[in-house]
View 1 (tube, one colour):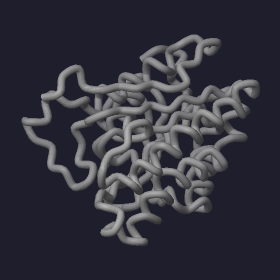
View 2 (cartoon, helix red, strand yellow):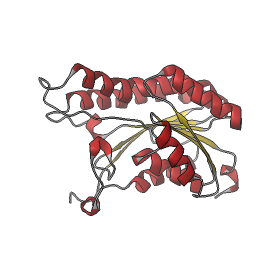
View 3 (cartoon, rainbow, N blue to C red):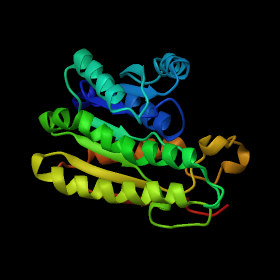
Length: 238
């Protein structure tokens, strides 16, 4: 932990598993105070108990659905009430439904778009004033699916193409207010996303701790420098 991080506050949506969990672990090791959210109270409570044993930072968690502006705003406010500021917001929560367009349901479309695209819009709306006050950092977790389309990916591609463009526009909106904005676009990551069960055959994929390391490296960069869009993929394909 560096002395400058001990009072830094980070907020991560979808922080109870996968990429969000990897980022939370890395920031706690750096001494950050970290708030995480999950749609499941049971899951977020269990994750908080595990994360209390990691690093020198502090951890709290909230049940909050990224599709609800009110729930996100309330969780951000509770974080501000506890720690007084917000330095980093990671809009990570995401879902994926994959099917040919004629088989994709209306419900699957809306869940994907509302979580992956509208959710980050609600995230910045809930946190922007606090990030301006701290000259903070807003990070979204997009995907290489936000620049490469594929069959069966109509909803997911739409959400991630949209998120990539959304984040780049927000970067331009906020850069002169002192808020840095970056979207990270990973390829294959070894997580339980889309009901995948992580196993030894995932060794070649990006690991969740790798994603945490990318975020830590971003936050350590001089504030005059902004990597606004980061593509990251496995070094090998298997």
